[in-house]
Image (tube, rainbow, N blue to C red; front, side, top):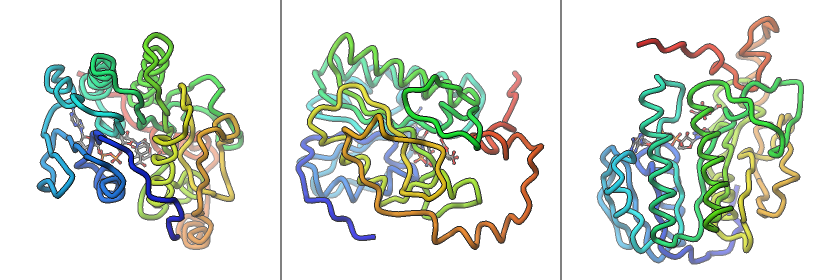
Length: 273
Ligand code: NAI
Ligand code: 15L
């Protein structure tokens, strides 16, 4: 669907996780709106174009992250492990790494961060209930716990230091829904862009939490408490429904992956030493 947002200057923006799936989608979309787009990841990225800087760094390297935030107005923090993994890996990338980003933001006076949280913060709610961002978290694994840590960390940095954050509990952001569950959780790339831009530009963000989903007909999430962000999704998973339902004709309602919003994440692990 066509992007109807007006061009805006987002100033000097840092995008972490720039080599990842969503980072690569957002890079050209954000570059067009920035004075400077600084891109960072532990993995290699495409060479810098006009208006870009590319810096390879590990999020758990505190000094490197401190330098990453120098001269930056706002951060879109996508970097980290994006699936369920051994706790030690998640501890470094998602917990220590996100702490480093916030501490560097405080020291450099960065005003706003858009934090890629995840629906897995509330994965143990059921698929037959609709929840909103004010309800207690129910993480479905190490990964969801690390994102809940990021949400709490960002609340502390707002309450104590005034660093604003919009936590995006992203559902499933892919080119199209991969399965039946994603008919409820899908966030198109164009709606992801709308969500990130709204989060960066809403005049008063404070500390906010919002689910990242398109205007799907079936939904488990009610974003009413986050209406102040001004996010209006324009896409929907509905055109994919017939194909996804045909591919998965039966649902085993004894399978926890069909009962809980987490889907197959409930089957990941345990990860033992
Ligand atoms: P991705 O796994 O494709 O990208 C994450 C990037 O972070 C990778 O390029 C990776 O190299 C980088 N990274 C990992 N550990 C790092 C470290 N220690 N230091 C520096 N960089 C590191 O994930 P994707 O799909 O692009 O997601 C982006 C963010 O959005 C992630 O934080 C993910 O948890 C979150 N998210 C994504 C969803 C989706 O549907 N794609 C759903 C919910 C949340
Ligand atoms: C996530 O948090 C993951 O990063 C992504 O890869 C998807 O699995 C998504 O959740 C989902 O729940 O579909």
